[in-house]
Image (cartoon, rainbow, N blue to C red; front, side, top):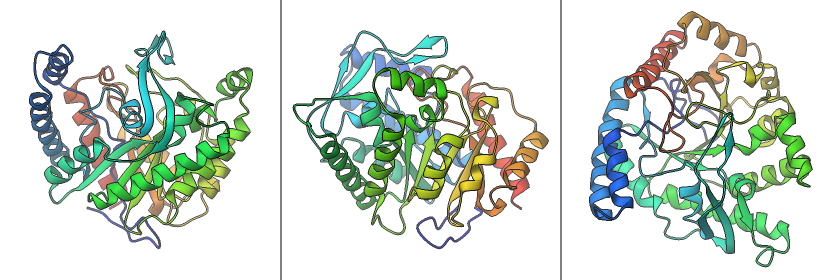
Length: 371
């Protein structure tokens, strides 16, 4: 493992990293379907999930990754499952899903129906099992960013007539979440966020304005909420953020480079690293990285696509890493796929064999670049 000490929280750099979600096997999908129809018990499902997670953790180790995840195998969604576990949040079925490029998700939604809090979250046990099977590897756990509850959820104005109080409670809820996961043994937590990618897109910002929402207000409130949640976290808790442009059945939602939010995020968010999507032209260039003004802030370049199985040319990826290093020192850069392989349980349009080949590709390139 190649590690580099930094001055603050981020004491370890994983040159080859991953966003987190992995393709569910057909067998796992079938067992989850059996549970949904009442044919097997919750304990039977969990036992099978345990076995599948142990299998994919071992496979991650074999590829050479040092930080391993549970592939989000116990979830249907990358965000709703966690958010519904917060005190005061409920999930429900609605008339339509989230619109992606030429496709749409299932019609799940969430709402805030009482005061927010964090208490006995079911995913704490999920983390503990991952920690157990990770062994001498780092158990990396992924949760949605606090921004996602506001961005994707309905907030009952009778509960929170003052939105400033909502954001304050949201920050306190996540602050407690970070501390509780830390006490369970977590030392690497990733916040997944699509809201910031929307705020990079002029098209998406126009849609927000049409709904009466000021994008500049969202930028201000999301940044403040995140920093409140991250403040005073344990020094050895590594927290990163993945900024996602959408990932469902190999499709996407938003386009646009990071320039509109780069100064705020890279210059003012108190976090240890960013996972940035750079797998195609929709992501723009590396110029926004000029706002990275801390030597202890890591930038994980998502140059390998998780949407399709073909392997990228190694020399092309190395050249792009070199281009990025014109704006951020090479010592601060890392490599990963641009997103997970299955943000929802349906998964992207590639095979499990291709998925492992992609992750192996990341490891091999990183070993050649950061010798």
